[in-house]
Structure formats: C-alpha cells, structure tokens
Length: 434
Ligand code: GDP
Ligand code: GDP
Image (tube, rainbow, N blue to C red; front, top):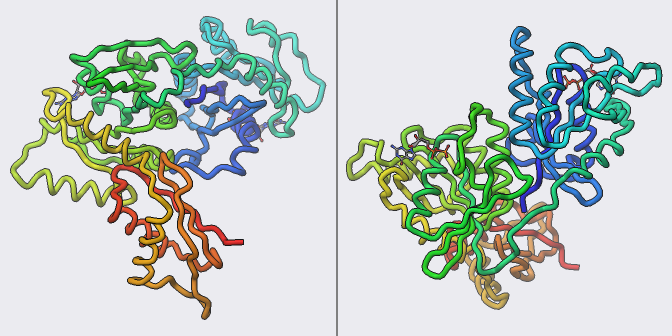
C-alpha cells in the first residue's frame, strides 16, 4: 500500500523544518532509517489517527540568497503537482510578506487542499487579520518549537487525505513496481511490456499527478504495474528534482510484490541508484536489476560478464537479485522481464518446512560450529520460517548476544545454496528460547 504525500512549503525561516521534525518526531524514534532517506531529513513518515502519510519538508533544502524567490516558486509548483495535501507555513511574528502573498496566489489556483499554518504562535500577541487576506481560509495556529497546535494541524491534514484507494487484494494479481532515476527508461519499458497485451489504465483518484496503475494480462496471469509514472504525460517541471523521484520509488516499492530496478547501461550505477536499490532491499520486495539501454553500449563477448561483475561490486548487499540486460527501445530481451518477474515472485513466496530447515541447520553446524564468546558457545535449538514475502526466519538460541552476524550470514548463504531464494531478501531474526 502506498501512502499519500503531504508537502510543507513556505519561505525560509518561517519554521518549516522545526515543524516537520515535530510532526514526524514520534515516528522517527521508532522507525529504522531507510537508507539515505531520513539522512537529510527531507522525508518522514507521519501517522495520525490511523492515517499514514509521507511528509516532505522543502525547507530542508538550501538556496542561494538571490535565487530564493524563484526556488520557492518552483518548490510550490512541484508540491502542487506531487503532493496530496499542502501545508503552507507563515510566520505570525513577522506578518505576511511579499513572498507569502506570491505563494498564496499560486496556491489559490490548485484544487488540492491547502492548510495555512500560522507558525511561531506560542504567545498570543499578534494580529491575525492580515493572514485572512491570503485567501486561504482560516489559519491553524501552531508553534513548531513549542509543540503547540500540531494536533490541530494533523487533524486538518487527516481530514483531506484520500481514502487509500487500492485494487482489491487479489492473490492472483502480481504487483510490480518499475523504479529508477528519471530518464532511465521506465516509461519506455512499461510501454514495451504492455505493447501487444491488453491494457487497462486506471486513474487513481487523489494520488500524484501521473501515478497510475496498469493492469496487464498475459498468458492468463495478471500483472499490476503500480504507481507507473509518466505514461499519460511527462512532468513539465524538471523531474530530476531528486527528492520527489526518490519518494516515488519508495511509494511504488512499498506497494509492490516485485520491484524492477532500472539502471542506465551507458551511465552505470550512480549514488542515487544505490539509494533506490537500498529502498527496494529494505522494503523486502522481490527484486530484479534491469540494465536498460543495452543497445547504447559498445560490446564484445566479454562485456556483459564484466558489466555484471562490476554491478555486483557496486550493489554488494543485493547479490541475490538477478540481472537482466535489455533495450526498451529495440525490445531486446524485454519479454524475458516477465519470466523473471514470475520467477522471483515465486522465490519471494517460497516456504520451507521446519523439518527441512532443521536438517539444514544440523548439516551447517556440523561444518562450521556456532561461535563462542568469553567461553560461552552459541547453541541453536531450531530454525523455523515464520513468514513469506520476504522469506522470514526465526532462529531460537540460548543467548542472542552470541549470534554474531557473520554466523547468521553463513546460515543465510546455506539457505540460499539449498533453496535458491533468488531475487528475494531473506530476514533472519534471532530469538532467545524461553
Ligand atoms: P525553515 O527555514 O522554514 O525550515 O525554518 P526553521 O525551522 O529552520 O526555523 C527558522 C528559525 O525560526 C529558527 O531560528 C527557529 O529556531 C525558529 N523557529 C522555528 N519554529 C519556531 C516557533 O514555533 N516559534 C519561534 N518563536 N521560533 C521558531
Ligand atoms: P523514464 O523517465 O525513466 O520514464 O524514461 P523514459 O522511458 O522516458 O526514457 C528516457 C529517454 O531514454 C527517452 O528519450 C527514451 O527514448 C530513451 N530510452 C529509453 N529506453 C531506451 C533504450 O533501451 N535504449 C536507448 N538508446 N534509449 C532509450
């Protein structure tokens, strides 16, 4: 399931970042950081009375002084395209300034809900009348620094969040997300994949501008390509604005079973690719790495192997993902994509009986005995699979402290050697047997 997006906009120094941190605070404390995402604290997941959403803080970005006005306009325009709800922050102590009126004029044109947050309102000595002149209705009084009014603000946000619209959960339908940097060929691949097949395009109300779900039937199987970007039309704004494109990938990966991670063959793996791959990995989805634009690469009979080796080095923590070289332009090997989707989806849902697992455990511990620390040896009582998608195991031991990660990694490798689990992450939880 993918969550709606709420963007915080406003000129610098009105307190956006402080408010952002306040709104996501509760979550940050309990959530594991997603690689590279919470790092710069531009996105955060918030939840309020059962509504979960992504919060974007455009204040986390810094601009050069002389470009502020232009950049703010750009940010607001992006937010109007990409977000479901917009929080416009103004400063009650300074009163509205020219830039606030400019932003308000832009926001009055959107059909998306806009909530005006009159911030820094910790003491009551200010004149509110001027803020009504912004034409955005009644302001919600907040103080990010003091944590005042944030509940009211979240109530307002929650009122406007779309009902989570979803295709019905259907075991028969495989949900696939195509993710990757702008221009890597996502739309081209989607078009090629849907080429001769029956295509049902469905507009998803209330989601981002051009996020649509695409249902494709092929050989009596149904594939739902989720949050497919850019099919209807291309964004007029520069799509390279990294935070929205990364957020898109996160949302698509969240709502899929299988993720196709696209890499541009001519450009190789970039830092942003690594971040996006990390997202798929942490989301626990089945993963195929698709090297697109293979037609652009000059090659001989060794090029593909060398390319693959290099990719394995660059993306060292996802060695499980199969790699496919395609050209969405010429259609080369594009139909193989379906075979790999089917294959990794099956591996993702693989379940192994406890009796088999314990045979494996016995063999493995006979070859490499469990480690010990300070004279105490790790004892493994048993191993059992507790979930699929991704395959998740619990291993019951005498003392979890003794279960060094290298030994857990060794067991993971044994599981992979024996059962494959190709294209899927594996989770292993170490538990103390009580
Ligand atoms: P941004 O540029 O809009 O993200 O603003 P910041 O969150 O970085 O805050 C700008 C300045 O305003 C900082 O000096 C904050 O300490 C201060 N500030 C933020 N929130 C409040 C508030 O609720 N009340 C007061 N009095 N000051 C605040
Ligand atoms: P998206 O932003 O990821 O959806 O990328 P697009 O599908 O819009 O593709 C971006 C550009 O790359 C377009 O000009 C495509 O024609 C081009 N392109 C896509 N796939 C290929 C490919 O396999 N080979 C070559 N040479 N160009 C491609």
